[in-house]
Each structure stands twice: as C-alpha cells, then as structure tokens.
Length: 377
Image 1 (cartoon, rainbow, N blue to C red):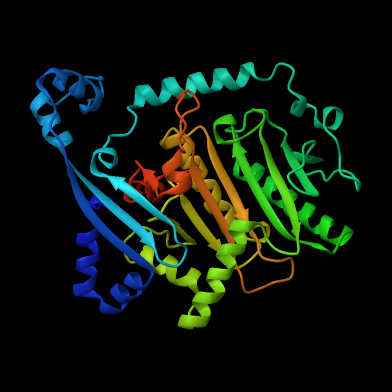
Image 2: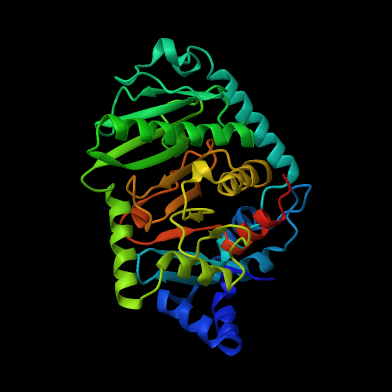
C-alpha cells in the first residue's frame, strides 16, 4: 500500500522506470527521512497503549502493550521540501498510520456538529443579511442561493462577503456551491468596473470558527487588491515567473505532473493531494480559466469538499481561490482546500512550527487522494 512513509521507495522506483519523470521530480522536491528513537518506562506502558493502541470497530484496542510500545519507540519521520516555493512538511509514521474515524464515531460527531450549528441560529444576523449587514456602495449582488454584503470590519478597501441562504455551512449542493462561486466572480467584475485600480481578486471561505469564521452561518469572503496581489499570492507569482525564466517550463504544469507520476493526482482535472501541505489534507486544484466558467472545476471543488465532510468527517476547513489580474491569461487560478480539525478539539492545529518552521502533518496524502478518487457523489 502506498504511503507517505514509503515515499523514498516510490521515488527510487521512479528513478528505475522513468528517468525523465525522476529528474523532474527531483528538480522541484527534496525528500529525506530519519528515525527518532526513545525508551518508554514500564510505569507508562499502559497509558501509552490506551493513547496509541489501534482500535477495532467496537472501540477495543487490538494490540498488546508491547506491540504498541514497539511502534512508539521507533518513529520514522519523512521530510518534504519544495525548493521553489519554500514550503515543507514533516510526516511522522506514528501519526500517518493512525486509523480514521470508526463509523459510529463519525455519525456521533456529525450529530453533535449539526446540534451545534442548529443552536447558533438564534439571533444570527447572517440569516437576514439584507436587514442586519451593510451593503456595498453599488448595492448587493444576488445569486440564486446567496447575496453579497460589505464586510463591516474590512480586510481591505474592497472587502465584502457572500451570505449563503442556508445557515448550515456544511449543507450545500453542487448547484449551491456553483452559485456562491459565480456570485463572487460577479462581484469581482463589478468592483473592477467601478474602480479600475482594484484588479486582483481573492475568494476565501473560512468554514466555522475553528477555521477563522466570525459566525457559524455559511459565508465566504471576497476581496479585491490594487497595485499587487496579496502577499502570498505575489510570492507564488514571482516564483512562477522565475521558474519559467530559468527552466523554460510552466511550474504549475510541472507540479501537477510531479504529483501525478506518484499517483497523488486526479486525472480529469489538475488537482492533487499536496506533498508539502500547509496542514491536514491540503488539496490543490489548478485551472487555466476562471472557475466560475468551468463546470469541471466547480465539480472538482464540490467533490473534494463533500468527500472531506461526508466521508472523512471534516467539519471545519479553509477554501481559497487565488486569482490572476483581471485581464491576465498566463497565471492560473489556484484553489486550495485544507482541513482545520474538529470544532470540538480545544487544541489549535497551527503552532510555532507551522508559523516559523515546517508544517507538522498527520494525514497521509496517499490516503487523501485515494479517498477522493473512491468517493461517490
């Protein structure tokens, strides 16, 4: 079974079978591994077994204390690094081998999440956005399942929101998600026609407070920047142009191929489970064209999100669409989707390592892509 822990073996196989693909991969990524060792005192063994022992569907631990201790005392860590973007992640064999939620755990968590969302309806301003939210100076843009409004605490001069008709942000169809995206891009066009200085669109969806949302009610953020894209997009754009200048190739085509050659990509669209995820289950989709005009891209976004929510139990996530300048055709649209963890866990998923070191990641990208590929809508 393919695993991030065996990534070096996969790369070596690639070297034997396809030297050109191997060369491309190595031109972008640096991969290494090391083994960390420790000794568990006898007095701590039972607790370690209760913490880390694998469980069956009934919730019973299936390993002896010695079997668990053997796994814990020797841990392989795989380090991935993208030499062009500077992004990197650390994958621990102990974390990557954890089983997913049992069906009963998944159903219980979904029930608790739905109860939490239902309780939040009381006094929700976003349930009646035209009464309780400000509007842009050119008015509101109304979609079939959503409406825009100005952000009362603006990120930037042009900073607005898309309020979903449904209160529950996890309850959406393909038609509804498509409408959210379409409405956002109509707003971008309206802002640019109103003020030509603002020409760099950015669409983002923080789903639930764990992912940075100020309110539970489903809503997305839409922004337009002038002079230059927002900082991280500007860095990515600079890297893209530098890569093209130095190699004569398209970075985004190459990064997709580098993932695809290892089985980490979708074949119907340019989407892949990232080898250097910012956090858990980061999925990236690249489109040459405006996603609001591409049904296959909207379907891919929907497929990934529904798989995460319905199959993997994700209840809090970030989704962002980084866009080129309004009339640019060379830089693509880049969609990022990342899991932000359970809303019921008090611990933060991002700490000093993610802010100032490398991302520490539990979920195996091979598990992520296989689950997405197998998921049936």
